[in-house]
Image (spheres, rainbow, N blue to C red):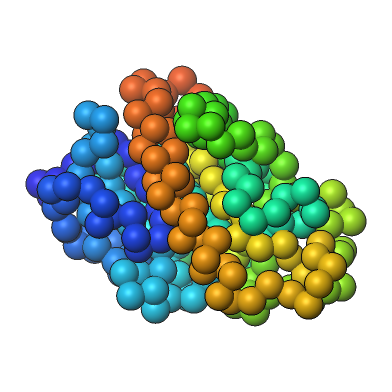
Length: 276
Ligand SMILES: [Zn+2]
């Protein structure tokens, strides 16, 4: 493998095209194909691998994304810190379209997704992963969160520091009752891709930072007839430029040497398989 990177960004397919001089590489994994090729380039002197989460043609719905292959592919080119931008619905009236949230907690309400590498099933090379239980009390990298928050503030976009992202199975949106229930729990935003992305990163001892752009108020938090798909696209288009700037600044601000707990998530445990 020739192209290497230290930082991964899993995001919309619009991001990689903004980098000059990208190298596109395909990566094979024991778990099958990632969502797309990796697009490797440089931001602020850091080597970055971009991966379009839904594929470049946006053909993969959230529940069909091969999250295990995606994280494995990133690690296999050298990535150790991952930024995960995603569009979300706001669960509080004050978290309207254009709000940026850097959550510090996650609730999993998905239903059908493989969420571990350590399931005891042999890989094609005959190695067998041991059953491991990683610590996940704090699902996101604190250093990554600090970098993202500082980057947003530096661009004059005051983010919500902390809060809970609830991840639903999708691809449908929530009913009003589901949405009101999520809001009543005190949760902040709702999305469809944040899990199992975060836990699989942790299982590979990668840093993972979730960065949420609110594109609409969720059904239970809005008073009107509901936001149209057109409005969601409009909000995303209005914000994608500054979100990209924030991501680039966050990449630049990530620590060169990791001293966070993510790096040692597997210490003292035997994965049973060779991590890439
Ligand atoms: Zn970390």
